Length: 292
Image 1: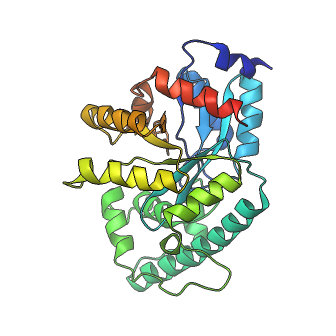
Image 2: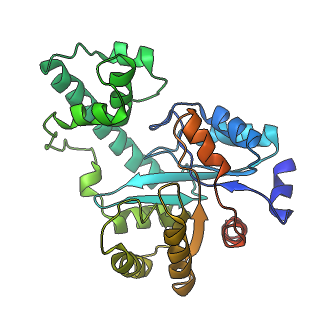
């Protein structure tokens, strides 16, 4: 197959963080792969939040276009997001966990819609589905719908409206919320599915002591099975990327990077053009692919 030649190329180009309409993205998996291909990327990971449903379609698109599609995921935990690369997306434990998470997301979405209706916003699932291209409703999609329906000026204002709705505290039997999933549990789940767990965008939150806390967290999570850090992310400055590169090297952790793509507006596509390409990340992709 054409895509198998990708890893033999010295300078193949990667984008290891993409979302589709199976989580909080706007586009189909095939369209995300096609747009990546147009931008010159030929090693592409689909990393939907708490979902692997888009991977089969993405893999088929990759075969058709001659690019390597890496099956991935981004699991939401109480403290952070945990990326998983080269996961067995049919693994029973992973599939069961994601089924529980999807049930919880549906509960939360219904609760938010009801809460916004009480605040005077005439929302229904049907109205939201007409203005957003999503397979499932979640807080992000509801926020986007508020903007498109003219109830909020921008995404920030919409998120503020959603946050005014009291949080659904009760966790129904058989469901899992992000709040009761630890980073270590996410790492274990990804490794059970034969994937490589990577801490997503460690510097996306600009805490004052992040240069001290992130290395310690990475060290402790490595003891729990963490295999890498997302060094390159749109929220990371050049200094932060350099620091995370050093931390990864010292702790013998893999390095990854990507655009964290969600939707096809101009600034997101511009982010694609600015993904730094490094030998370290290429080495990660080759190494992880070989260990499958």
